[in-house]
Length: 79
Image (cartoon, rainbow, N blue to C red; front, side, top):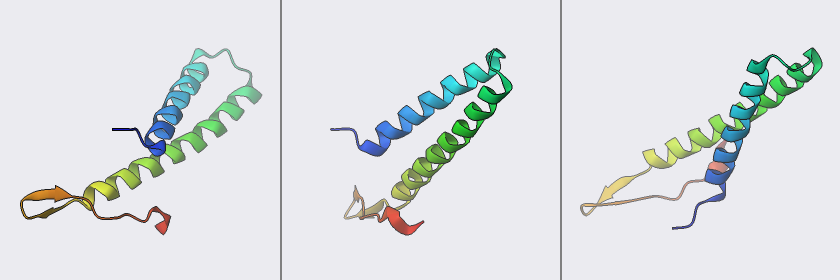
């Protein structure tokens, strides 16, 4: 089964976020660099939250039909 783009984007964003946190925690960044990293972290956090929200909505759309689980189409453009 091939991985979907959103999964890869989520994992990539989460990895970048973890690296930013490590850089911020190191205390070696200037104030300007810290602020820039923080801003980037906020954007990455929002991206991850949106991906998780969409995944949750897909899971909620699972329905049981004739004893088997199937999914219904999901239109992610609702937000």
